[in-house]
Image 1 (cartoon, helix red, strand yellow):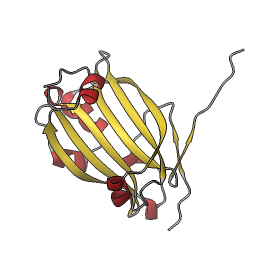
Image 2: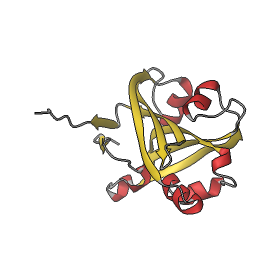
Image 3: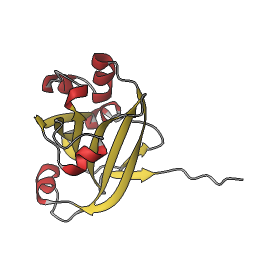
Image 4: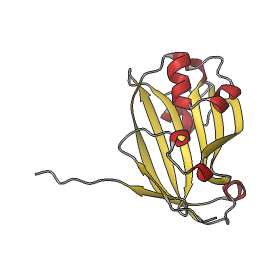
Length: 171
């Protein structure tokens, strides 16, 4: 099946599960991994955690219709979200869940994009060739107290997604 690339408005937070798509391309998510672990140095630094502070690691495969189109690795500080359960993420969007269960108020965030190539695991999950082009997107989201609460690394194959960022000229 051929897809027109999905375009996101990256000036605002967005929800994959709430994408407005035709019924045959309805967005769904598979939770591949949900575990509590000690983060590597990079993830700990991004979330402003000590090296031994546990995080939830959530790996999700995002699908349009039945076609896998995104692979995400999300890290959340475990202490901030005690008793977070896998089945809650199956039924709810992450941000909706954090807002309702933990009264989290999202302030803002930042995403960094860089060109990359699909690795072997991503190729298997996304049904692509190893070395296919993609964008890696790193998102760091902050709560209303300016504390980072989410760090996500997304693999977005170029065949499925186009990114458009508006530019304005200061007068």
